[in-house]
Length: 152
Length: 341
Picture 1 (cartoon, each protein chain N blue to C red):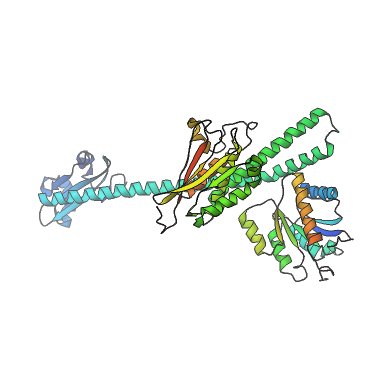
Picture 2 (cartoon, rainbow over the protein chains, first blue to last red; picture 1 turned 90 degrees about the horizontal axis):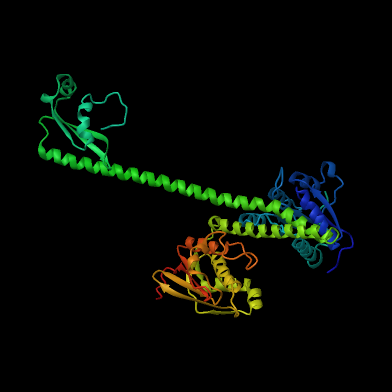
């Protein structure tokens, strides 16, 4: 169990600025060293992941936080494409959504989401959730030392 | 056959003369020779010697008639009786068909409006959650960051907002679980009630410890049910027993008894009890008997139980006296082939 020395690169796919700010607040509050790239919709997320267009210099994230309901291409499409693209499929995807519908949960795991989290209500519970995510994915889980491999 | 309300061009020209009799549910028997000459030609062309107009009445209302034409001889008494019987049978069948059609229509409408309502409750509560989450998160953040930096009144007001948002969250989340009962295609399966109860007790374990409660469980049978939903029922009823407590620490007894094809489950507590006049009301959605300050809650728990039990084909009721505890009874279908008595 090692704490990475470099900031954890997070791709946050989220169209609601309020949620983006809140995530940033909780990273700050928890003093987690992160480098967050925000994608406003599914299309932008895929452009960042494939380093296309304006995102030619983007780096491959260590983890993806994915909202399901997004403009243009929604989170399910993004999830499907990430998990069926060899160079991206190993990146852990944390689905972070307001839906607690069983059908959404099943669908997300069918598409190989790494975990499904319902957006917590209340800042305290959000911080608790972020802390568990960071604890598990950044400390407990062993991730490949060489990063996610694939270069484009 | 000609229905009275049909506006067709080839209405029998004799019909106006027949109508007074037909509309009082009497048949008209006419021989050709008694008809006005002008009306005979059409009959003669078909070789008809006598004609019989038999009314059809639905619940006393004349709605049409069937005309029977006889060639070769004139209608005889016995024939007329038989035709009258047959026509009445047709009328009765039409009436039944009409009632059934109306009933089918009504059921369809009911099903549709029910589904609409469930969908509405689901969408409303789901979509309401989103903005509410924003309000709640940010006001909490505001409270955390700026508590004490504004004046005391501001702190108090922020407190109201936090409290209001939290209550609304509880309400909406309860409403969601309520509306989800109908949409969850949770299958009914043979289910040991003990498993559901155990799960409920685990979820309540903190409260059980805090209240120093005793939960006594007699042997529980296997029933036909949905595990998650029956867990919810136990959790709400036992949860209430732990919440509405009297002076002593709570004692909850759970047992089941076979009643016909059902098992009747009994959950008895030693709490504050319920005034018998409210024994129906407590199962209504958002119905409460206490203020939030006395006992917190949204008033959805027992409505949820009722909805679940009724979806399971059972019934739920309470027997209680104020100050003497309450006993909740609900029935669930026994497992098929289980003949335990």
